[in-house]
Length: 448
Image 1 (cartoon, rainbow, N blue to C red):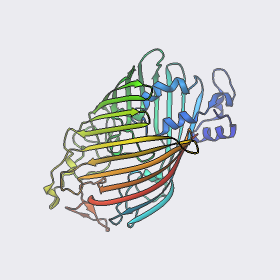
Image 2 (tube, helix red, strand yellow):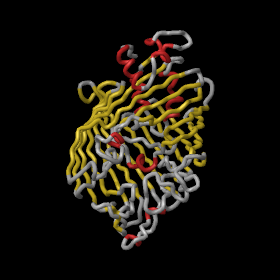
Image 3 (tube, one colour):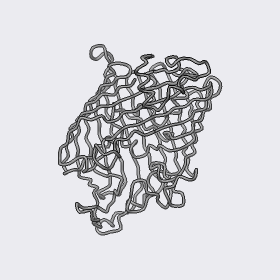
Image 4 (cartoon, rainbow, N blue to C red):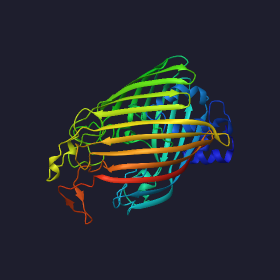
């Protein structure tokens, strides 16, 4: 726990808190007594490689451990990376931790040293039953449109904010309300930094209400989701618009984890969502409303044995994505297709490998398929090998090597292509199944 007043004031200012509001709790405590920092808690809540779709469950299981009632907890996390990327096709890079556009990546090789993202969290336990969590997000490398220095790409915004009800000491049920990750699938990655294509394809964030039960390894949840295409991965249109004016979507998740011994456990689960991202007509436009809703299902499993973790996940829509059919020749020979994603990976922890620190060695394959065989937008895949070490409990150093195959950006995935003059060219697409990318990357992730 850190009590350096200058640092706390800085974080409080970033999060928009005033000295008056911070000084007026029911016990009239001073600033230092009200504000708390727990770097382990901040790291685990902000981290997207673990518990991404199950943050509400993780919060329910751990809030008594990390949060003292009546205190405000502040935290921050930052990720910096340096990478070199090479492509066999001019200005087509498929590594999705950076937006793959010609506006940001030109030629057949690119390199960069950037702050990938920075996040700030504020949370607290108001009563034994009532808590809250909020997260500010800055990530110009993952926002599309404009240059790296454009104001539109350099804003900090509230990525998540929710109110939580639950007390595991009294009852196994909980609920959370707000803008949050939807419990759909597992969406974890074995890699130290890079998300799998499964996460990019199916992980939803939306205004929603999660109602969950967590009891002796069994976890189940039902989530009511506010509709509208403004939530890309949870898209149920409201009167064929993107206006989120109705609670018309839902998701359900059921999982069970059994611990056979101290270092042996297995997790299996399945999920369903009424409306996924894949319902737009041709041409596909990010956040377009669509005329239908397209459900999706997901199954996942994870096994932990001693120092080895193995994980697999598969998700698929129940209907064809209408926009994957281009009506113009010669691409009109490819019928609309269902969308699916698959990931499988493993991680081995090498204890005391270097200077008394553990090393995590990981390998993960994932793919995203959105078209029939032979189509330019058929598939995009990613193979990631990683090495990482925690030099402190909340500071991670990592190295990754990535091979990407195929180039299938969701925006106008099946065409029509827009040429250099801004004109639309019927019967063409920027998707390209022959693209091959190679990425070497080093980075650091740290939380306070």
